[in-house]
Length: 315
Image (cartoon, rainbow, N blue to C red; front, side):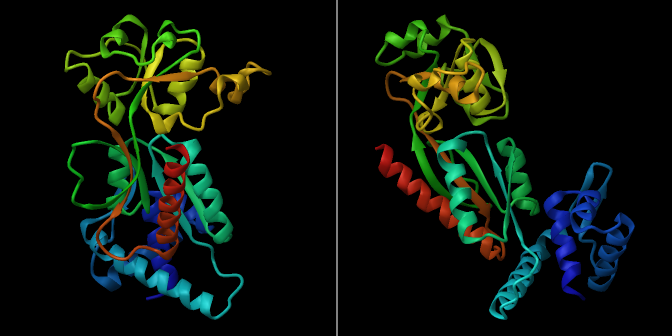
């Protein structure tokens, strides 16, 4: 058994494809496939399930993945202790829902990069169900997801609450609701409503908020950032947790080039929803089972420290 065989398995798992792993590792796909099969024969188990859509860890592979990660992490520590300056950089993959990207994720990645200049951070936007599936299969090291107050935390993940926010109605400064100190739920029926697509927590939140009667969405989209851009264009209003808009540029920044992203994001404001409404939690998740690479643990800690700073700054 060779260390590179374990690194190849980790790459295939992370990327979900023999082809993409071969491209990253600069190997031919047949050579990579044969190396993986040699390891499977040596261990006596099928580590991968090979499908037309890609390769994923088999059930046996998922059981062995923590041990594989543990070995690779130990090799990294050995190389570091030996003072090797040209060791292969590792990658940390983060799956994230499209919320709190600007105020939290960007400073986290910047701070982590200072401490780990050789480690690549890959950020992948996805729906929550896809993120959690990739966490279990080893495709992601960490997952940044929304969670509704009162819902049970899934037992198969270690979950760390980062931010807790109230839902707010995000609107263009010219919207009639801008004169309200708080917006009643019933008032949402009087304006075009931009919703998140099915599969997003905020889609379920708005349905629950309106008592199960079913909102009449004028538009639906993927993620908070696109929702805010649509609001800035005057297409309607959307409901988001307040941590998704705190830190965005205020309307004064909307001057200048009207086509710039910063100007468009400047053309939004928000008001709280009236009454007692459940909170939305931003949660960092990782799989419970087995070893976690040191780089992923360090990135996890950076998320926690940055979220604490944001909470203190904005409250």
